Image (spheres, rainbow, N blue to C red):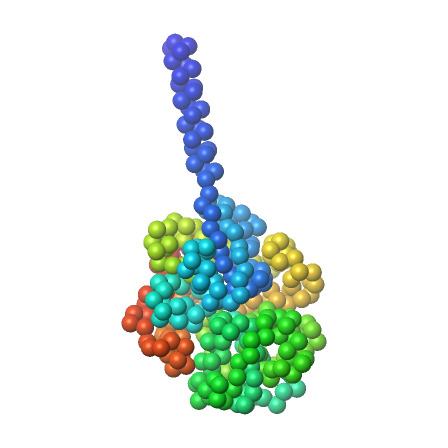
Amino acid sequence: MSMHFLKATLAGIALTAATVTAAMAQTTPITVVLPNPSALNVFPLHVAIGEGYFKEEGLEVRVEAVNGSASVLQTLASGQGQIGQPGPGPVLAARSRGEDVVFLYNLYPKTGFGVVVREESTAKTPADLKGTTIGVGTADGAEVGFTRNIMTGLGLTEGKDYEFLTVGDGGTAAAAFLNNEVDAYAAAVVDMVIIESRGIPLREITPDEYLGYFANGFAANRAYIEANPKVIEGFGRAIVKGYKFGIDPANTDKVIEHAAVANPQEAEDRKFALAVFEAVKQRMTPLDASRPSGYQPPEDWEKWHKSVVESKSIPAPLDDLTKAYTNEFVETWNK
């Protein structure tokens, strides 16, 4: 073998190795848009970032928090975000306006919301809220549709029998209670913990039949999903790993640590952080343990569809409800 041939061969091997290394180092940047700044509220995402699960999938994830599900969907529609975490009600409303957004991953198989009143309130059920003001975090967030559905089911009409008042989340909601601006609040699980941490004992009056309504999950525009199926597969796999890591009691400290990177203030009071985490875990636990992570029961979508039609959250029934969601990637995520 000539020295010239040997050098050329070695150079070729080095070039091939460098090309493979560069290819392996390539990552796909994506922006994930959340409806509020809580990190514990979406702990599988932050665990997947902190434990390197997204990196293993070739994804570089940037997280952006906005104000409510409507803002999440607007950000996706503008192309400034690729995957968001809206509620099912706002997704159906967006589809009724012609936006082809698709719910991908059922993050909260149990509802992430509840109607709460102060412990000393005389209200025992939502029917007792006739003639009152109900606080909400945002004017068009998922909690509004959830609560409107409950009230509509009781024959109560917004603007006639009760009012919604946008008071913000967490601490500002606590202030609204203290100032007697609201008689009840449509709270996310995190808000419940925050309000009670401010010395305001709460009592949940959500009817049992509504506790099974799934809440926020991950969604993306159909055009993005069809153009980037590998991104969706990798994203979901990382979220499943993050969830399974997080629910192991041995990893609780690491979960709080990962969440604190995204929202340091939320983790300053460890007792508070643990209370939020336990509440969130409970709502993320599937009603049916045999179902894989992220799965969306079609019958639950039928419930949501019926409720948003009856409450006039959308002007008319959707022509094809099955286009609002997909379980196409669930098996791949859970392998």
